[in-house]
Length: 96
Image 1 (cartoon, one colour):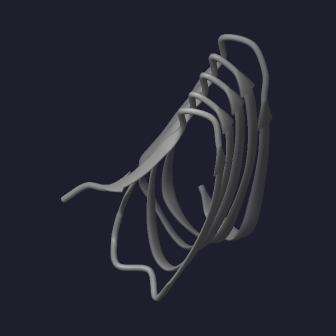
Image 2: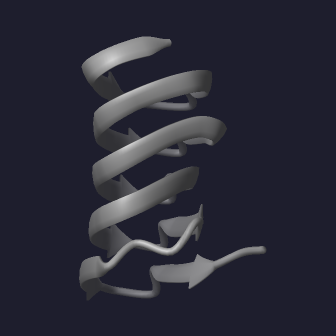
Image 3: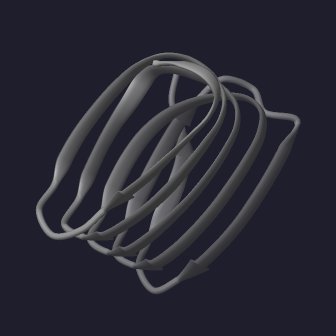
């Protein structure tokens, strides 16, 4: 992918793989969705998960995460701003 913005909505047991370089990623994931976007370089990522959705992302400037349930978000990069709202057993962590 390339361009200024990419929006993704996944439900159920979807598995999505993304790579490339975009400015902004918007992701809304529900159910047991999986997002593999560690090879997609983003400046800003906004991600919302509901249920047991898992996401792997790369972000350089701003990361906004909202998790409801047991979702897991792992990210690489060093975003200057991180906003997180977690309700339930969800988690967010940095990976090398």
